[in-house]
Image (cartoon, rainbow, N blue to C red; front, side, top):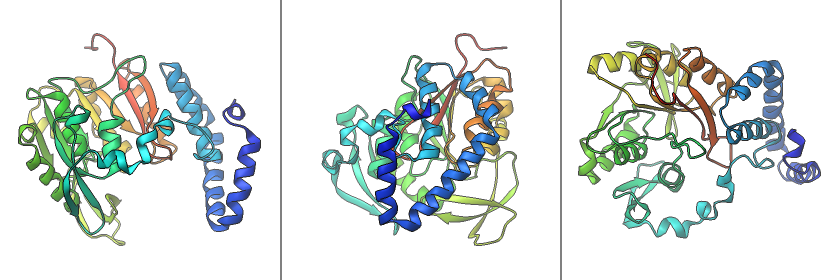
Length: 343
């Protein structure tokens, strides 16, 4: 039961205190939660189907807590063990990993230079604390419960939504010299830092290939976008506030153009465009049956829409969910086909 997840009296008390201090914020948050309640009620059958589709008890617990947090607030519901990791908000821990006092300041973000050898990754990277933690410390693209789902030696990896290149370096370190990482990132601000990170790691540089076209359901579609912080919000045929036009590519077309003999792992975090990205990856998924790590936190309906779509391929994928932050972000759907692939 949702009510069993936390003491309701504590929740109410905290809500009253917060409401007195932040009336506008609490009103907007209430609207957000009400919207989520209505969506869950309207699509309860869909959510129930995905709950039953999940392979292990851990994933089912995360699923229930995740929906509870969307209704009652992430500050009131324990969703993930990450909340108990003591170093997560301690600057002293991250400072111990500094390579030097070098900093990249792109006008919006200040990224420190880290040396990760002491935590098992022989590489250097410009990053912020949170992104570093997600990629290398928590390893958010590795499922660790009951069944391990991860990038392995020799894997060919699609890294959709590569940002500053931290996940690309993580995957490259995992797959090694016989693997390949195909990273997709189109924001020039991010690409500049990405290239700097590649130059810091010449032993991994040749494993990683940068692609500057956004992933979409098809290729050669013109998209308008405006920049929103570290990510890019993409509009389809919408000129409002757009700063640049982009030409899309689908994963299926990319794989064909590159004449790739395999794809072993697809990671996707593309700011809410994951459904479109997966629509354009259907042939690749059916043909190569890769391991999947797909973000499902940008829209509440993605929690059921994305696994339902993948399951419609009838490939016997097994589904798992994990959550890697103390807030709304970083919920990952993992999927793998056990043992022999389906021909």
